[in-house]
Image (cartoon, rainbow, N blue to C red; front, side, top):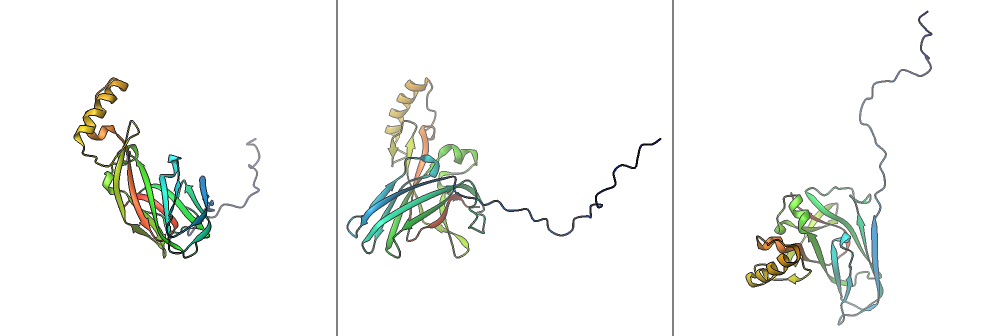
Length: 212
């Protein structure tokens, strides 16, 4: 008996030709934070402070060229390239973000964005602290924004603008060894993150990244 002919039912599968289209999954924000300012005037810039380090942004200070009312600043964090952005950012990307300023219209004169990058991320990716740049998606491409390394945050939570301050580090080394029982072998070991300043005259999709 050699047992029936094995259920013939389906069509033979044809060889796949051309491009396989995989359905795209919409990438939406994994986290958002916002702050509303009743009034922003020429004489009184406002600052949004973000305490959640997941965003990679510490502060956004807004200067206007004309008074603006009920200005809502919203920052959204994405775990990968947002669906609305057609071009992936090459290089090592620290954060994909979108910054919006509702009720600002064309009144934004300048925004100063303070970003913070964990030193551990730089080390894991083999990057130097001076490689970090913020890019904004504009006119179909990622454009570099002027990004300045301003200061560092230490393992004890202090902010120091003079990273090479020898006296500070010898003092910090004593505290560190008291807390952990081991000595700091170099200045960089005392640093937990780096702080950068970026200036822009418009908001939108941005990335904190290291260019190729």
